[in-house]
Length: 154
Image (cartoon, rainbow, N blue to C red; front, side, top):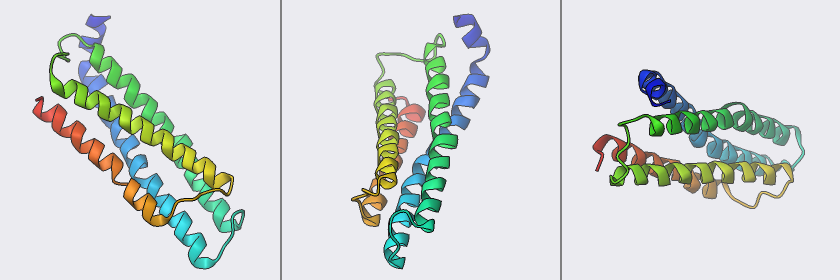
């Protein structure tokens, strides 16, 4: 299998980068949608279950299910293929572990966002637009850790 992975290394790496870009776009945009959802309903005095609420729920579902979930899965698949490619990862280097922990952190954040969507569906969202704005910084911090770790290979 190592020969196959080595032969397809550049394709795998390219697909990994495209997957990461798609996943990151969703990780940045879904919390922003939640901000608009919370503040849009509050500003207009609209209740859960209204037409506006249902529109936001539809957009959030599509972003999560049609873009973010497949992109996260593809990121993991191509990332693990890169890890298994002979000669790519030196396991005693710190950068590998920084990246691994950061990717796990992004996955946990992704699941947290999915749980927030379920709270909206149940009409039980307890977070403010400000809370979602603050949480929107989490993927940025994790992305910076990953990029600097991979590029600088410390």
